[in-house]
Amino acid sequence: MKTLFRNLSLLLALAAIPLLSNAATDPDWTKPFPPFRIIGNIYWVGTWDLSTYLITTPKGNILINTGLAETAPQIKSNIEQLGFKLSDTKILTATHAHYDHAAGLAELKRLTKAQMVISTEDADLLASGGKTDFVFGKNPAFRFRPVKTDRRLKDGDTIELGGTVLTAHRHAGHTKGATTFTLNVSEGGKTYVVAIANMGSINPGVKVSGMPTYPGITADYAHTFEAQKAMKIDVFLASHAQQFRLHEKYKPGDPFDAGRFVDPQGFHAAVEKLEKVYLDQLAAEKKAR
Ligand SMILES: [Zn+2]
Image (cartoon, rainbow, N blue to C red; front, side):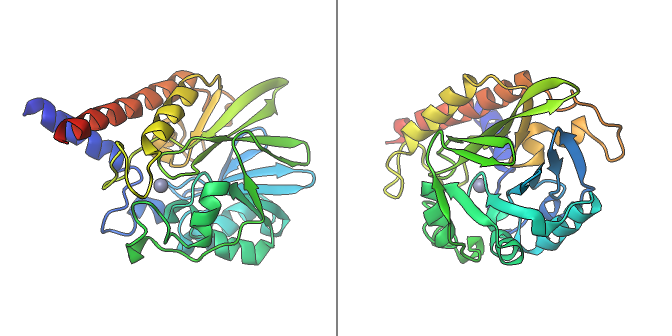
């Protein structure tokens, strides 16, 4: 009972990160947060918890993730506070097409006319406005304004703009096309490998042993954890601030520190924790059959 309770609270704690329950939003998703430079040409322009990354280049900028539809104006104002222009955005992309990361894409695409680039699988989810989601598809609370994708990525494809190269890694399970992006940045004469990771968290209602709407889910999650454990990275960033413990590592006004988000151990520990949740859930589902 104790173990069950402990597992249950762990599960709930982890699920709370991207929790898409009856409450359509979490207050931390809309709470403003001052924008700041993370490292190299990467900036935080998201809210308190929902990551939006601005990557600036001499040929225009890349924006990764948008948060909710109502936070699009916050993103615009954060970009401007840093001295950049939203209209310089040339590429829009996302780590996965759930509404807490993609609902603002339609408005930002309208404002910027940027190219929409996302994984092949999540391009379909994005085009359906959330309707084809394997677990939330039938729930109107999880819908958002659909967006047409201009370029579909497969595992290993790159996004290149003004000397910056992002590599897309298909880390599926959370959605069918969930993606981690990696890129190299220069800071103080050193090169850092940055991961903007999509962590393998499991949403409520998901059966990791297989679902008719997602038969390949077991293998996809297993691949994601193996691939992430094998990644050699320096800077750990993710889709939610909480996932890489942004607020423990940085407070508004802190002086710039290139090493602030360098945390390969933290990344691997977070992956292993989520892998354990997956393995425990998988074992429990198999036992219950
Ligand atoms: Zn999600």
